[in-house]
Length: 392
Image: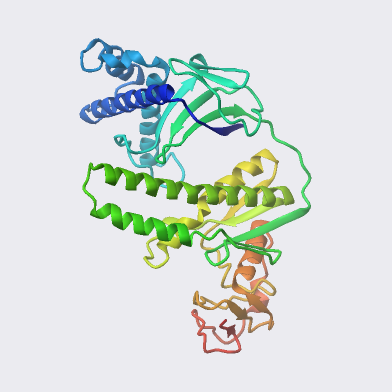
């Protein structure tokens, strides 16, 4: 299986200029090819686009500076555009799973910049990485590469940080697990509640988020194109990168721990795109990184030969007693503790949902027939019913 190993590096002033020129050429080639595709009735082939926006463009006075950079990342930029269009068309026709993919859009100078080199455009010599027409770069090797990389991508993020991202092949690892299975309920108050009863709190982003809001208000008042506005934009990007680094570190550590300890990991398929439409919770939900956590868990399950299960989002995990299987109906989000009127067991809302997620994931379902009562239970539980709910 393929994996990505990313390392940060600090280029010299001369390398910064060369990288800036490379990113600019890659961006121009992408935008030129995209403009041709938008104007064409039929999508041109990748080879035809490369001939138009690279080979023939170098002979013109307007694009002759494309010859100053390596030809490999320029060709890869056009190839990536073809992949982006393929994903878009597959998404429209239903051949691609998941959320609908938007069509490719033009690249901007202030956004994340990248250029990809294949094996013919780079080489690793000891502690340094040679990039064609860029020179030798010495990244910070935080860990060794497990195998020879097939490609490397040079990345400059919005906060002006530089990274080398290698694509390598790794082999699955057989490592015994201590727990047979576990269910995880994701939330806002506690990032994850495990079926074992443990609650894991996520990082506190409130201070950084408050600074970002203040800087964004300042940015809105500044003149577009001014140096002060660019300075404020860079400060906002650095704050966002700090939040992203803290969240990624937390998610990596948590996902690694969960996958190492359990053989079967079960999560719930959350409709995050629909949940963020709630104006009161949109910002808090966006900061959690639920989707990123799911992707990390799934990837690490493949690496360690674990079973990863995602249950349907319509499973009534928070409306069912995990002890006897009785369905008590919808409960308001403000209610954090519930008492089952069938067996009398008291449950924490999140812990009960996590246990039900685990049971549905491993295929164990309660026999709901014996829990049915002659009297009908209302679909929405009222906090005033002391026999059913304890509001904390």
